[in-house]
Length: 100
Image (tube, rainbow, N blue to C red; front, top):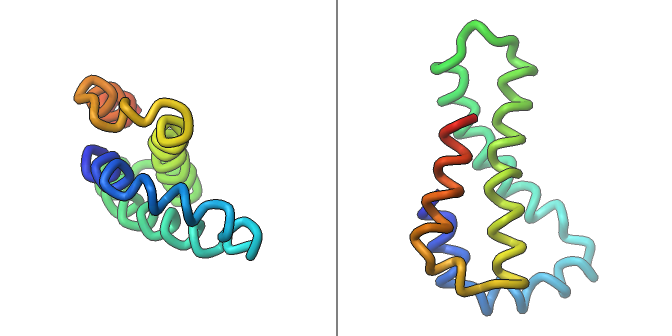
């Protein structure tokens, strides 16, 4: 979680600058590929931690975890960029992910 927040904070200007051109070019697939790659790695961990769950349930968990961390980071980037440097913000995101 903190590595993701750090990367977004350190590349905030680039992220903002690329958002609109990517949307205009309909490059959502490029962004989705990155998210899917993170979810795939997370899925491996979830499968080891919850072997009793059906594979589809594990995929849903991975998707929700990635999305639940990504959304507030993107919102902070747009509306409250100072949060990306706030250790409490990272701690809350981490606690949310760990609680799941």
